[in-house]
Image 1 (spheres, rainbow, N blue to C red):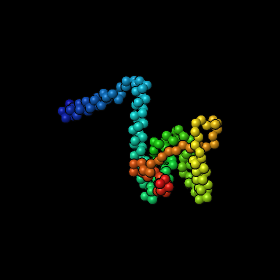
Image 2: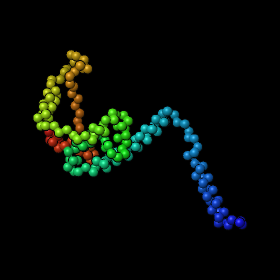
Image 3: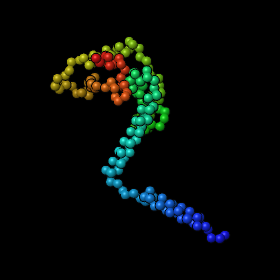
Image 4: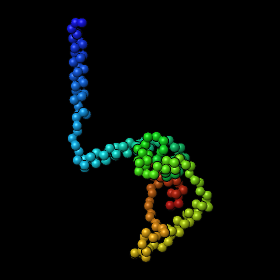
Length: 172
C-alpha cells in the first residue's frame, strides 16, 4: 500500500484532535475536594432540583383525575404519593417511612356510616368546645386525654382545591 491520501490524513488528524479535546476535559481529572458545608449545600441544591422536577410530575399525574374528583379536593384523593411510577416523593416515603404505606395506599378507603361520622364529629366538637385553660394546666400536658391545635387550611393552593365545597360552606 502506498502513502495515504491527504483527505485520509486530514480526517485522521481531525479525529485525533477531537478525541484528545474530549478526553482533556475535567471529567476524568479529580475534582477539588469540597468542604463539609459546600458538600451539604451541593446536596441540598440537588435535592431542591429533584423535588421541583418531581412536583411537576406529581402535578401532571394528579391532573389526570376527573374534574369531579378534583372538585372534592386534593385531600380526598392524594393521601399518599403515587405507588406507580418513578416519583422522588415515593422513594423518600420508602426510605424514611414504614414500608407498609404502599399497601395502605392501594387499599380501598373505608366508607364510614353517617352515624359513625356524626359520633366522631360530636366527640371532636365536645373537645373543641371545652373551656380553655387559663394559666398553667393543673397536670402535666403528657397526661392530657386530648389537646386542640387549630390550623387553617386554604381552600385553594395554586390551581388545586384542597377541601371539598361542603367544608368551605361549613366554615362559613
